[in-house]
Length: 378
Image (cartoon, rainbow, N blue to C red; front, side, top):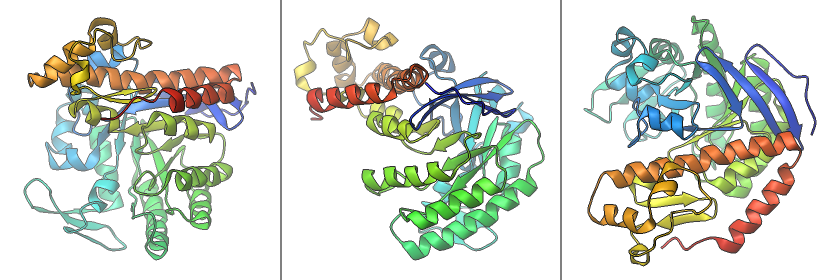
């Protein structure tokens, strides 16, 4: 184990093991132990689960989305109601995504220029305009502990588009820094550049030079290969300064978390575990199980015999399949508890492996078990 002296008022890097890192992020609503996985609560709620249940599974950071909350119920309304923490009754730290990914996914209903984006709401078709300054104002109204710069998230394989989007992202990042007024929020810049090594290196260097206290890596896990994603992480990790947390946006498969932690990533979020739960799938460290499968109708085992979540300590596969077959809402809640616990506990174990100097051994054993015992997805 290597203990690093790296420390700022926001982030402490406590230990490293190879490329892996263990640290602490300090926020007004509590400290965050890294590596960590943040459940996604897009519209000020993590679907199918209560804040108390989130706390019980060990979640420490929750993500919400500025684009969705701006459209409904409105960021000014949330501010008038006491801010996002009060509104959603979550006492821990909150991170808000700027909405860049959501806006740029509206390919048929938005127009991009150097100043910002004009788009039509997916809710009612009304026209809206987002600029870097507007996005910061929205997130300041929401009151999250960690907020994100407005970026352009392009399709990862088009070099010309990625170069243009990267330059725009850098310009918008500078404008976001200039627009920020609240001292109790930390603003992260976002690295873009698609799957192009020189663009990723250039973007990481530019964003790091602007002085953001935390840096996100966007535009990955959006259609590129796993090999390309990991290659980009290695390039970015070689450029970013060690004294700031690194946040890989939108990644949530267990194998990807392990590979990313080995390449220096500290923070993750993804809709994967909650979306899988609503589609009757259980996420385990050995793969996924389709809980609708008839083979589970009389299976008295828990989803994962080694799991310590409430669902696995209390209910059988047979009961979960019964809930699903009966259309009972409890199925989504119990599967969400399990799926989120799987990723939250995995990142906690990765943290301990870094501290113990055992990251490679943990990774090798995990991936060997995964390849040997992966259950069928049907």
